Length: 143
Image 1 (tube, one colour):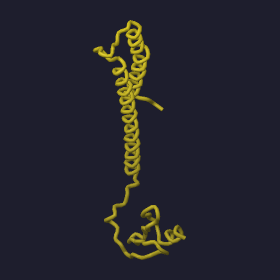
Image 2 (cartoon, helix red, strand yellow):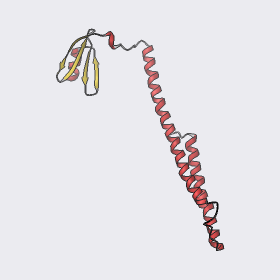
Image 3 (spheres, one colour):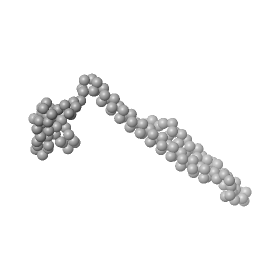
Image 4 (cartoon, helix red, strand yellow):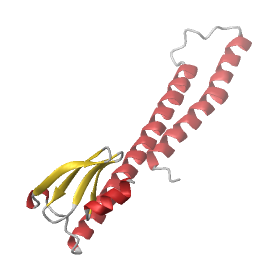
C-alpha cells in the first residue's frame, strides 16, 4: 500500500505534537509545581497546542488517505474507459440500438424478451438485460 506525501506530513505532525505534549508540556508544568508558582495563567499553553497538533495531524493524514483512495478510483475508471475504447477501435464496434428493428415481443417462461430483425434476442434476467444471438440460446440459458 502506498502512502502519499500528505498522509506522511499528517503523521509527522502527530508525532511532533505527541513529543511536544510529553517532553515539553510536562517539564513546564513540573517547573511550575517545583517553584511554587502556578503557571495556569501563562501565555503559551503548550498542552493545548500539542492537542491541537495531534487532532490536526490526524485530520491531514486522513485527508491524504482519502485523496489517494479517490485517485485510485479515478485511475480504475480511466482504465475501464481506455480498455473500452481500444476494443471499439479493434473492430468490435458496438451495435447501435436504433439500427435494429423490433420484430416480436413475448415471454420465455417468466421472462420478457424482445426479438430483433437480425435474429438476436434481449431477455430480462435477474442481473438485467442480456443479449443472445438467437431465441433458442435464450431459452437454453433460462432453462
